[in-house]
Image (cartoon, rainbow, N blue to C red; front, side, top):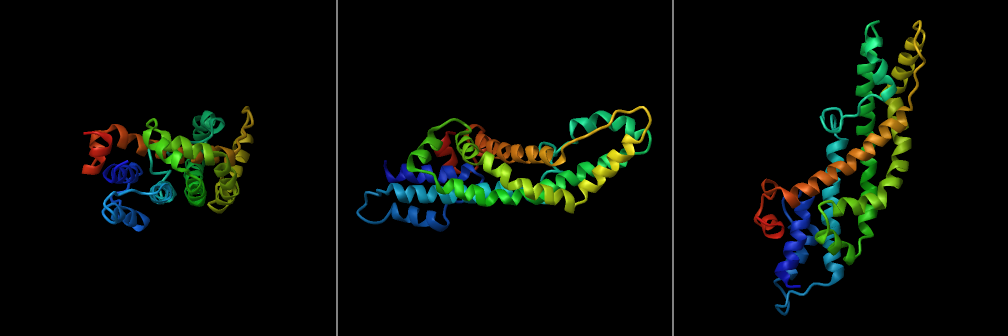
Length: 242
């Protein structure tokens, strides 16, 4: 592959994950090497893989930063975590007897717990990306609109859920969601002629948090591949088409 094509491949993949420049760290060395030496611009598989891994590490880190920020979940119309179904079903009835504020507070605290636990994904992304082979790199570039997301989900969805579980439990307790939930359920279950309600808060929040992380990755990836407006640089237009 010609050096120009390799440079476009690397820079295009960097932009794929929301970066604005490919000239940093290991990538700067890679780009410099395309114009040095004997003029062939030949790069080793190891060098190309190193550059792509750095790009993906920084890019996926931005997804973690977005969701792990204050209001990363609660302030998002797409990723905000709703109340469990069992609570949604009784919210109107409970609100009629003055318990509505408990539902609102619980929803806020569930989202705060997810925001607090999301940074755990960073080290797992780094680990999964470090295992990319050169064949994986080319497969991602030439693959479907969600090829990178599919690769990372396959590598880390299950371990991410287990790594985040204790943090979700801890976060739910620290932000007061557990106390609010227990108080809410206790008050509601004492009302006459109502069925008892129950919900697994940690599993509910964990499932939504895990889904949101990979959904945001997929959205960013697809936008660069398919949306001309998202191709904000000449390199993006060169790699993915005008």
